[in-house]
Amino acid sequence: MAGANMDWLRNYDYGTVNPGPSGCPTTTYSFDANNVHFGAVNFPTTASLKALLAEVHDRTEVYLEPLQDKDLDHVIDLPWGAKVPLGWVAWHVLEHEIHHSGEIYLMLGLLGMEAPDV
Image (cartoon, rainbow, N blue to C red; front, side, top):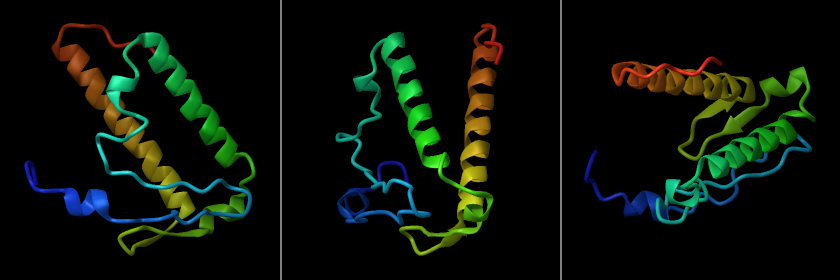
């Protein structure tokens, strides 16, 4: 799909995403690469990257704090029509982070650099 015209996706109005269990903040999607908060151009220093990580961690804690075990069964309606439980979404995010961490460690190793101890 490289080079494909993605304007239809960028211009599709997803509106507010399923707000999740009671007490959780709502979110919106943005596929506009020129209008995103998390663009690399907005975080040019290690200090700004560390601040971003802290902000995302804090937002995640705020979202998770009111949840109870039963909320993991709450079904989320995804914009493309799929329905999945919140627990699946949480597990998917964790797996996604592990996957990309592995890629970073591999790249560092291929460059002869030592990976940080986490």
